[in-house]
Each structure stands twice: as structure tokens, then as C-alpha cells.
Length: 147
Length: 229
Image (cartoon, rainbow over all chains, first blue to last red; front, side, top):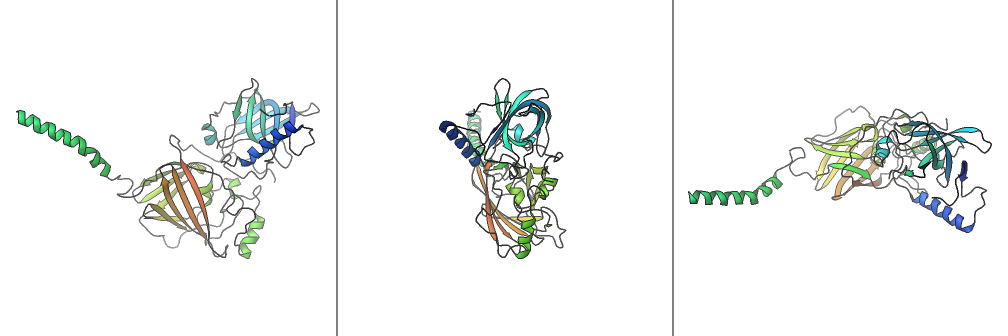
């Protein structure tokens, strides 16, 4: 689990304006290095250039759709922004063949599920991320890394 | 009667010892008498999106340099439109491939697009080839190494995942060998006189994946990946 608590909508960024103590910074720094070193074949179809691979974003919300498809699967959730408005987020996953090899199934998440998605946000600022993992309401984690 | 039983026991015992040797020497009719065995499901050991790491300069011709400047992985990567990767990029894709050896061919069944790459073992290149995404591949054995020569490409694809261009003059030679039971290496020599002033090389290592099967892969949901358009 990460050092920072996950709120309804929280951006965990090394470059953001979040005040962290030295222990928290060390944790985040280690996390970022791990992400950078994780150069395994996580996503098949296109490069990761459009995503900020130096930071993880965490978003808690309700699943509205799970697209079990190629070249990528997608999870769509409704989340609340800091003003309480509903915003849609989309998480991009690997291909379904690779996901199947790491225990994902077409019904792993279902509309109505309360989950938190962790991933690398699109650099263009859209509510889109390259999924790293999900955490279910009961605290169970499931990695989306397929290396 | 006793002698007959004795002879039968001796013959049976001899057969038990000899049978494994007989089967061990029986050629696999689908692989060729003495061809090394490359069959199995293989997966790249690491993803290398760029054939030329940052800080190194490809030996571009002016034409290729101009093409490379136009390349945008978010907009005009042919793969975003679900087009085939082409050779050699197909061999760098982080999806598994299964190698089959059948009479006159080595077949590489790629999970990426479920493409079947044919390497023809007992013929040369056909003349007047129509340009295609994966070209025309012919192979021969050099000891334990499968040498694959491919020409006949169209110029639609990229050589790697960041936009290295090529022309229809692309010529790729691969040396594929099983360095140990669980490891396969493909060494590439890439030349294209219209795009590069000299040939260059690349290499990809694969690990054997026992128990894996190639999954269906139909690229039918790419509607989100043109984010920057």
C-alpha cells in the first residue's frame, strides 16, 4: 500500500504540491523508481509515451462499464472531483489474452462495484490512466501488470 | 519349451533396452530430420520500444530523417489503426508467439493480431513480389541457427515502436537460435539503402512459456487510443 491515504480523488505526484515528510518522500521516490524500472511487457499495443510514468494517480469510484476487448480492456468509473461533481475516468489495461494469464476475467469488475484505480495518468490531462492495479471495497488488490 | 521361453525373455529384455534408442533416433516427420527444435510458446524477455536508445543516432538518409520527424506515436503509428506491425517490429511485440515446424515451413503464430508468419524453408524468394506487411520470408539452417531472409515489404509499417521508418527496399536477416532449453535469441541485421546509410543490428531474447496458449486477439476496440487527435 502506498504511504499516502487514498481519498475520494487524490493525485499522488512526485512533482505536485502535496506536502510530504521525508519518510513519505522516500516511499514515493522508491515507488517511482520501481515504476521506471518496471519495463516489462506490460502493454502490448502502443507505447506508454502518452502517460506520465513518473507518478501514480489514485481514483475511487463506481464502475459503470468494463470493456473486455482488444487491443486493450477498459474500466470506466464514475468518481467525485474535489467539488463533489461526478467525473468519468477511464483506465486502460493490457490485452485480454495477457490479462487472462494474470487471473483477470471478463467479470472481474462489474458495473456498480466500488473500486479504486491506480495508474499513470495521461499527460494531456484527460481523465484517462494506464492501469497499474485496482483495489476493491474490501481492500483486496489486483495487479494489472502482465509482465 | 524352456529354450523358447528363454529366447523370448532375452528378446523382450533386449527390445526394452533398444526401443528408447530407436524412438530417440526417429525423426520428427513435422520438423525435418535433423532440424533443431524451436517449437513452443515464447515471450520476449523485455520490451524495447526503440531500436536506437536516446543519445544514439540512426544512420538516416535525409528521406528517412524527414519521415521520422513526422512519426507521432499518439497519432500516426500504423498499429493504432490495428494494421500489422510488420517485420522486424512484430518480433518485438510484448505478446507471446508459438513456433511450429512443419514440412517445408517454420510457422510463427503471433498473438498480436493472430498473425501467422510463414518462413519457407525449401525455396528462394519469389520474383516480382507484391509488397506486403510481413514480406516474403525464406529460411535455411546454419548449424543450430535458423537464418531467415525477408524482403518484399510495403512501406506502411515502422521498424520499432517509436517510428523508425523504412522503404520497400527493406531487407531483414534474422538468426534465430535456441541458446538453451528455455531461451531463444533472434539477432537481426536490417538494411534499407533508401532509409539508412548503412545496415544496423538488433537483438531480442525470448523465454519459453510452458503451459501458455496463444489467445484470440481481434483488434476491434481501438476507439480510445487516438487520444491526441
